[in-house]
Structure formats: structure tokens, C-alpha cells
Image: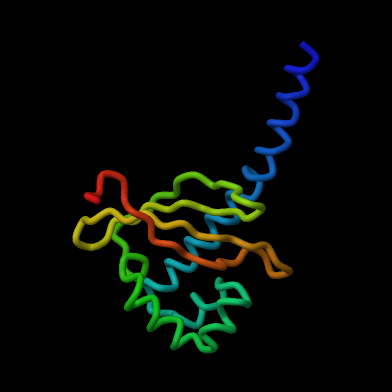
Amino acid sequence: MRHLALAFVLFLTSILPLRADSAAITATINQQIEAFQADDFERAFEFASPTIQQIFRTAENFGQMVRQGYPMVWRPAKVRFLELRRISGSLWQRVQVVDQQGQVHVLDYQMINGPDGWRINAVQLLKAPGAAA
């Protein structure tokens, strides 16, 4: 019984930090998507990690990449947050996006926490559930 109680406590201590971070992570991604929808790439660029900001150097370059490579995020019809996971020490927020044509896309956002709060460090477009191979 003691081992079961210890296992439960360890489980709770591993999940509680994720729940605490979940609201802030969701807010960060939502705010970036809202900035994209307003074509406010300066603001959207603020939610990118320092590494991403160094890669693209300007909000204009970043905006061009998003418009060309992630149009479903630039102009989503619907956004739904799925699970937040810890993978190899990194937090990944899975997001389902329905584009303007009704196509479902699933993305993974790698999040990092810095002095200015949560920032997006990477976005991976995943194969949507039910998509043909």
C-alpha cells in the first residue's frame, strides 16, 4: 500500500507542473495566432523564442515564412488545444487547426520558458489523424 501511495504522489508531482504551465502556454500560442490573424507580424514575432528570432532576424521574414509554410496557422477557421506533453525534457503542446477549407491539421509546438515567459521554439506539422498514408 505504501508503494501505491508513493507512486500516486510521484504521478501527481509530475503532472501538476504541466497543468500549471498549460494555461500560460495556451495563452502564448493563442496570442500569436491572434496576431497572425491581424497581420501583426511584429507582435507575433514577440512570441517566438530568441533562437527563432535569430534565425529569421525580422518580423517580416518570420511573417513570410508563416504565410508560405503555415497558412493554416495564419488564417485558421478553428483552433483546438490537445495534450501538453513532456518529451525528453521539453514541453510540447499539440494543437489541432482547421483551415479555411475545412481541412484538419495537427501541429506540435515546442515551448520554452524564459525570463519573459513562455515562447514558441519550434512548430512541427504532423500527419492529421485519419489522413491517408
